[in-house]
Amino acid sequence: MSHPLPAILGGPPIRPSGPPDWPGSNPQVTAALGKALADGSWGKYHGPHVGRLTEILATAHECEFVSLCASGTSAVELALRGLGVGANDEVVLAAYDFKANFQNVLTVGATPVLVDIRPDNWNMDESQLVAAVGPRTKAILVSHLHGGVVAMPEVLRIARERNIAVLEDTAQMPGALIHGKLAGTWGDVSILSFGGSKLVTAGRGGAVITSSPQIAQRIKLYTQRGNEAYPLSEMQAAALVPQWADLSVANAKRTASAIWLCDQLKQVAGLTPFQNPLSDSQPGYYKLGLQYDPVAFDGLTRNKFAIAIRAEGIAIDPGFRALHTTHASRRFRAIGELPIATQADERVLTLHHPILLGTHDDLREILSAIEKIRRHARRIQDTVTDECNP
Ligand SMILES: Cc1ncc(COP(=O)(O)O)c(C=O)c1O
Image (cartoon, rainbow, N blue to C red):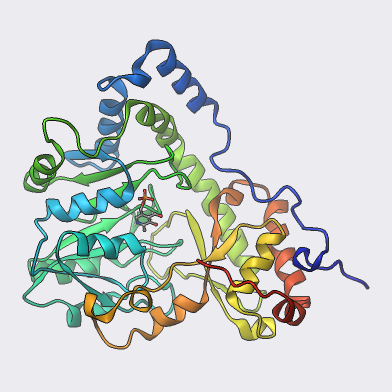
């Protein structure tokens, strides 16, 4: 039987129209923005939407203070400032994490301390924390990444025993549950992102969440300069309110798709989804993380696999660069050799979330694209010269 060539070698792509667009059309958002246009609130400094979104997020997270801001990146900076992190302090984070988290620690004058990640879900390895914390540790910055969640009870136990604060980064999974408790409610301070690719999006935007009056007051002092220094606009808030209302339904749909796909991937050599060993937990799926093994693809490199599957119209991309591989060693302190994070640097692939709101046929196309690439892996490896630049 003859099989069509992969798109990267000139064959027809599996999804000629490419990955589903994001954000998709949402009548509630259209209506909310239409109303904000009609009543003029879209262009005002002060209107009802920022206040309404603040209330909704505070209620959802059962917290006292929500500070809306310009991005998830600025939210992490503000959270660090709220914790009083500064010069001579250390902040512990996973060596595989979003680059801006590392940069934010430097921005406030502190030193990042990098710990390795777990072999099963390539999220922070909580068993590394005891070796990482010391007299200068001010905070542990925990990100839940790519459909994996971090063992928050253990992180909190270690932090509480030593009087260290926990900053929980929930940018990738608003509405996720960890041991039945909402992600973003574990940390002393937590953040959300409303960036353009995120599950709840205003193109840009973020939020800091805390119940500590001291943290909230420090953030207020930093951001209020007679004018707001890090604002989220009324128009952004108007678009976000209806999306938050839809989040749990959309999360349930994404989770059902992720479970089905991960089950199918058990039969697929060389692509292992991030595991979630925690009981009673429902991760969010901004990205579905996959551990790629080039041996199962005839030596095809991870980056070339990503180029080939993108050409099929499937939004699978290389993950983050590991932080210790891209920053000068004088910038951070590392706990051990970080072997798993080094592996993640070379082997993470992430499936972008919009297809998880599609049908089983959409998901089957992912599996077909993988097998098409596997059949031609050697030729793709020899032909494609361009490496991705993640
Ligand atoms: C884990 C994590 N934290 C923080 C951010 C920053 O969010 P933003 O893009 O809104 O600045 C991101 C963005 O992708 C992220 O993945």
